[in-house]
Length: 77
Ligand SMILES: [Zn+2]
Image 1 (cartoon, rainbow, N blue to C red):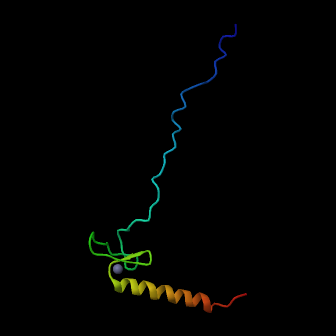
Image 2: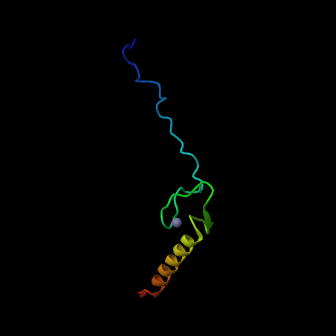
Image 3: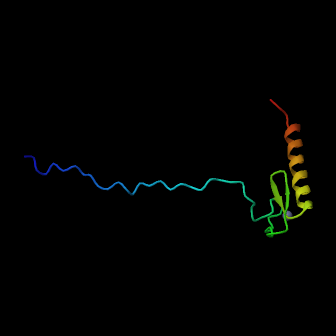
C-alpha cells in the first residue's frame, strides 16, 4: 500500500478562456476628423469612415490625399 501517493488533482475549472465578442465594424461615437461626438441621428458616413458633417469628410479626405501625395513625392531608394 502506498499511501500518501496522491496526485495533486484539483478541479481545473479556473481556466475558462474568456471569449471576446466578435469585432464588428461599428459606428464610432466620435467624428473621425474632428473628434466631435456623433449624434444618434446626425452623422455622415463615407468610405468606411464616420464624420459629423460632409465638411469633415472632405477635410479628412484632403488630409489623406495630401499624405498620399507626400508619400509619392518622397524619394525612393
Ligand atoms: Zn467632424
